[in-house]
Length: 529
Image (cartoon, rainbow, N blue to C red; front, side, top):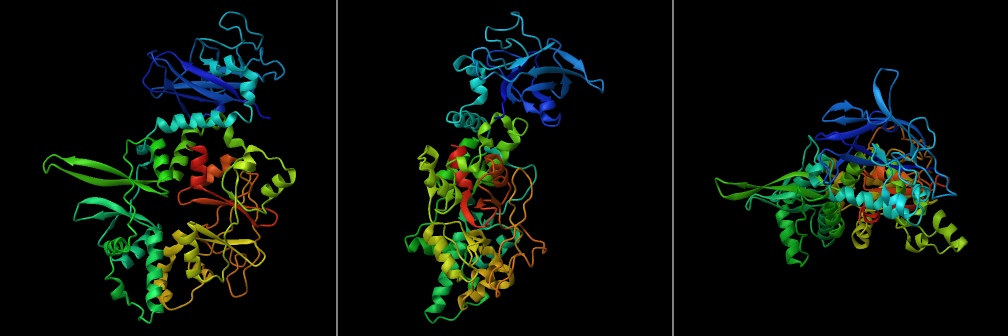
């Protein structure tokens, strides 16, 4: 087991902004320090350090500083750094365990130390929460059943002290569609921008009025198909352009299927608010809307600053803890030890738990279901019905042997904009495989464990379909994002923080068969709430 000693660094010499940097951050990343309540000019931060020798320094208002009240030494380049030594605790004797020492590494004297052997009133201290309750060794080991609350507590603290404005990039673009835009043009616009949903702007009201999503386009294509099946002639492009986004929403209202109300986020909402809003309303994204009051006209105007997603929150979280990920031990836990995602009944994890008859809390909380899949030969409209009726966001594509070969997601609906392929759907029986052929050839999924690439040799589809292996050299956007059940939670979080990645498929690295699906909402519900 790896040990990390919770060590509190304190800067007592004033300043407005203080950061910590050291050998444990590779002298690259910096750790922001927080002002101590009721102690002006005092800043602190807790970093979990492995046993051994460490050097560190403070950055105070942009200037590198060291604390002369603590042990310091010059490095080979002539810089002066503070230093400390973290001792591995003795598990057998938690009462006398020591987390850190300084100077000549001898046993500490009574001066400057408390009766537990921990430094007090120094630049680095071990927190009372750990030393008083259960001893240093027990706290460093962080018992498995208690640990999740510790990591989740630190994450919750971060989410409640940071706002949605931190999700907004310094530069970027936001797709905003006029509600009176013809559906066909909106379809092409979203395809060109590489997205399947966007906020809507009502020029009559001068405000953001809702969202258009992949589900809206799927519903429209189904209606077009149904019209042709009742002996109507296929619509021309000119006829399609008579149907606007506003018209679609009004038609849905007549049918009693009211469009979802606009779910938006204010720049000053906390990241915890962002997570709660997205999960509660089952949204993949929500626009961050800034309302500005115009004193001349005495009216309010709205501007969309960015689209908030759970993946964006995960990315913000990783950036904040990038130099101290060891302080979140939960991220080191393997995926198969956590109640996250939906797992197949014949997956390795579920089968082993059933054979062991363990009845653990994790196994009882694990969601087990028949994973719905399709093949390349599945009719597209059948896939549409499966997506809408089942409430799924994607359908894994397998071959006759059950090997994962591709994935069809709701967001792939915009691929039909290529060569106006949606027009053919009115009268042709198009298959999932034919639609996927419109996209750039899918890249092999990345089965990475500890950042080590593994090859993907999925069996080829039927002869009438395109083979992943035969065309793997064709450049294109990676479509399948995968992991294994032994990957740590950190790997899952890192991959889901990539823009555009909304789920990971858990694949058996030996059989290449699908074992489970981990979605952003799964991670959000488990880790961020």
